[in-house]
Image (cartoon, rainbow, N blue to C red; front, top):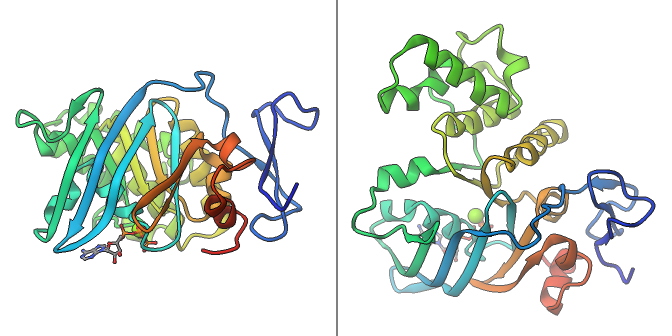
Length: 296
Ligand SMILES: Nc1ncnc2c1ncn2[C@@H]1O[C@H](COP(=O)(O)OP(=O)(O)OP(=O)(O)O)[C@@H](O)[C@H]1O
Ligand SMILES: [Mg+2]
């Protein structure tokens, strides 16, 4: 195994019906655990939902992303991994033009969704941010009830009908795997939820806006393993309807849930490919060193 994260092929006898089983190693992976790795998408390559082309990014004079070319496939989970300061958050924030809130920042290149540039003059940034929802590392519930947190966005966009709002809230909470835990207390304060529940609430809030793409920047940072597992479970379910890009909590999380993985280092894309390939036999020594925990 040569110290690598090891994913066995789907034809292997030890593999369960989720498709792949992972045997970790002692350094980066927990050797005693079999990861229920992501269901492998039957369309191996898939179509491009998002394409980042020749992206350079600057904060003031400092360049932090260099000639990035990266695609996100429809209905797959792309994990972008890398050590601190690799430019992962910057890349995520570019996909819904959130970086524009920082006047010091400058983007060069292009990003398209379904073949159309997100910078096209005819595109609305508000509509882009609805289509490309974002979940951050620290859950940020609004100081209102659980119900109102989810209904807030749809109400702002004009949904008034009480029944339609109730349906939207229930559907979003179900998709975020939170419904069963909160259905009897929708009118209580969202702040009273646990950290893991608050994060699923934030995912539900994004889902209520019926996005196409969900960006998650280390959504499980501060969460316990059970809450983390719940969120991972919901993401694997959500990719059937949405396209997901995640800056994972750690390499193991990428192994568990991603279809494809991109490894970034100091603002450059080092390697990208199917997770079943990159985690088994990375092409670049730096990827190998990172995923086996030799640096990070
Ligand atoms: N608002 C900002 N102003 C100036 N420099 C910034 C700003 N945000 C990020 N940077 C710099 O840009 C580079 C990339 O940062 P980014 O947050 O995208 O990396 P990251 O891979 O998400 O790292 P982390 O592990 O810390 O989340 C870093 O060198 C960082 O210091
Ligand atoms: Mg970051």
